[in-house]
Image 1 (spheres, rainbow over the protein chains, first blue to last red):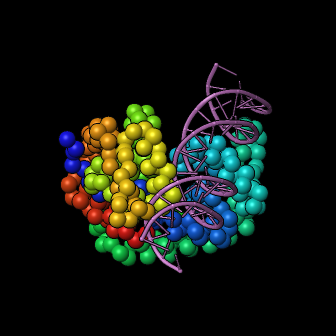
Image 2 (tube, rainbow over the protein chains, first blue to last red):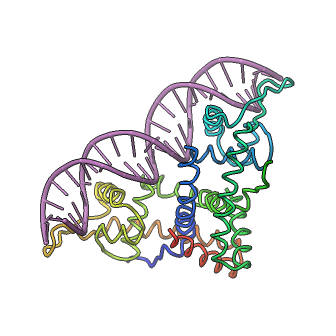
Image 3 (tube, each protein chain N blue to C red):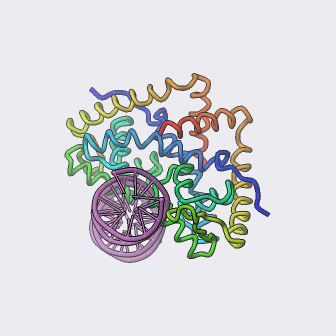
Length: 143
Length: 143
DNA sequence: TATTGTTATACTCTATAACTATA
DNA sequence: TATAGTTATAGAGTATAACAATA
């Protein structure tokens, strides 16, 4: 016999539907304004929000594979949004740093992100948002 | 000057990280057991969980484009997990129905899904889960 | 030998346009 | 003309292996 099952109670499905719906609209902003892809946006925001760091550090913080970061860094460099600086003590590393143009782009997108988040937040109570963020962070860490 | 911004507070980012982390592990089950892709799994679960319906109805319920559903249906048919029945009144439609084998697969995966969800749920309080599901459903509906 | 990063490749996923058949 | 579904195609995203350079 066929079991009872409602997808609306299944967490991975719900999370994906919610994530797709929300990120789709933000995606349009960085894509249309700057032709950036998803990983490029993430790398830009890590450098802008947390300061200069190596590709390796971005991998660890963002949970991204080194090949993805490598390609995103190259793309951001081609757009003149970041520059690399060799580390003399260990020449396998390069410190990645936003250019002034990269910082302008970051600031512009941060504004968009903040407005976007406020609009989303306005639909929920403070309690709901607190719980949501706390639970999502823990879910993401289970990876 | 560079603005303050923490990705850990940005909803689309958080949602994606949580969704990726959770669905990645469930994905392995239907991929390794039955070689199914994401959309195939979704279509199978719609038919198994909500009963026979047309491709169009799956599109509406799952928020999937007709091309995705069309390909998933074909793949499930090739695997002998579903069969089509023409609707005489309107020959543009076909009712999609799981085969006995498709139902066995559905039942097996529903078991996995339930165990998976219980394990996830065990890490949170009832209040947290209620809030989470309610908020996620509303976020998904904003699409 | 181990680590940082790059390149190559294949596969999955998404989005859109053009098409067929039926209504 | 409109709708259900299919096919074609391109671009984006993911995963893995092989590689170069440095340590």
